[in-house]
Image 1 (spheres, rainbow, N blue to C red):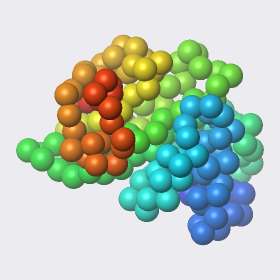
Image 2: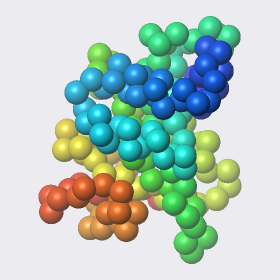
Image 3: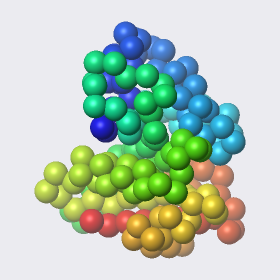
Image 4: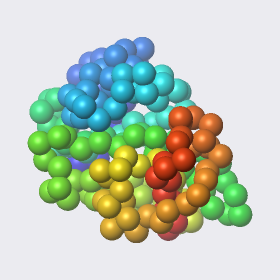
Length: 165
């Protein structure tokens, strides 16, 4: 099941002002060594970023932390030439179930959710260890992206990728 993080919090009777604390806890639970705390806080504190989660359950009324397989943070960064553009500042799969197809499932779900009869473009800054996953999915390497350059500390060997549907 694929749901927004806000819906997930509502199933736990957690109000919106606590979103940041709970999002950080969830990300650290799923990916304990993948993201720096400063980067997590920067991404989850931005109101324009939306968090969606992939669940391993069918009962929407009772969702537990152990049901969460992965998450994706998505941000609408505008429209150009009739292409709706989105950035993926973070995507993570629980460290114990990686390489089982859940990352692909999460990308498939977010693409279905975003597409809605329009052309979309996804851009992201990949970790070296995740590059092959995105290339195999169909992302292509790009040299630069103004949005990613503005929000992230990019180095000369940064891996920037995009996917157009």
